[in-house]
Picture 1 (tube, rainbow, N blue to C red):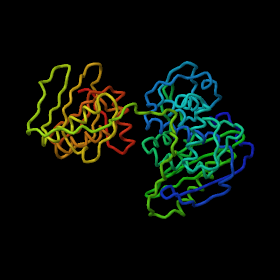
Picture 2 (picture 1 turned 60 degrees about the horizontal axis):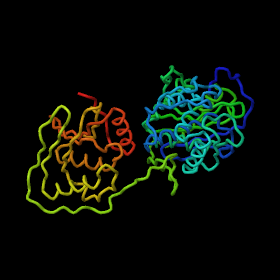
Picture 3 (picture 1 turned 90 degrees about the vertical axis):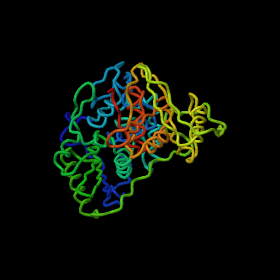
Picture 4 (picture 1 turned 180 degrees about the horizontal axis):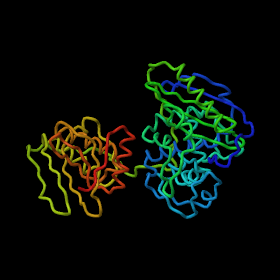
Length: 434
């Protein structure tokens, strides 16, 4: 939240602190760490965590245009200044919430993902429980003071550690001194600590009169990384000084070498964490068993301006029949994955129109042999059916090896596919029209 109009010292709020070794989760210092207090804009850490989760799950994309509601536009400062009815990409709302701590952006994120801020708050609480934040209750997406909206230094430290390790691809947001948020460039509310403390790279500030000046900060020096949390600071300067003192304490107490023990990803039991549930309407009920036929070499007709063809010789007729059965079984709807022994077959016979702006693609690696590239393409296609359905699997040989590509995609679909694959720890980058 904006500190420009905040008095130099806040009304005294209860003090609490926690310091952990981020690598292992070991507690290095705590004081009143389990006292339930007002988190203020530290709340937005959970809003952002769920936004990253929703993007990973395919519920929404970073390029989705979010319509700003009257409710979101009416949030008090700090805010981006969004207008009711305005449309803005989710990525800019995320930047505004993470860097400027914009309340209107946080509310818009919650409404875009769950349909309403109340439903989003329920998801926040489910996620908090799944992360082990046992003393936290959220009532809104932004952190403005509301009865019952409470957390602890321990829980917010836990959340900061999950942001760092669960979504490292987004963590750089928290260290940006400024960023473009779609309608204007915004400055980081934590830039003073980022500029002053060596190794500091995040995470989130918060202030309300009820909470005082709060901060979850992380810093890395060499192999060591420490997270420190403070609730109830009396001013920006005194809070930053206390956090710096706690980070120093953490680096003194943290061992130089320690085994990295990342926190476990949240588990939600039988209920889905997402606001949307995707059900497969039709699944393959039986596997088609192909008949043996003589070995042969299969080719497609020559290319035309409207089509691209990829032809790969099968290693055996049985491999070709397995692939044919898979393609026929899938049809136009998602199918259940085959056993590992069936995934290893490399046969690919695909054809797709490149009209309609589908000139983009993705690359999932370079391999030493065509067979290895084809194998990865097939496994990847079965892993990520929803975004790769209908794409062309194409192996391109060059002087450095065999490139494994999916082509025939729109730019938005290619970006989404890459993000989903990267979330599964599968290397990927987009390919533009050549």
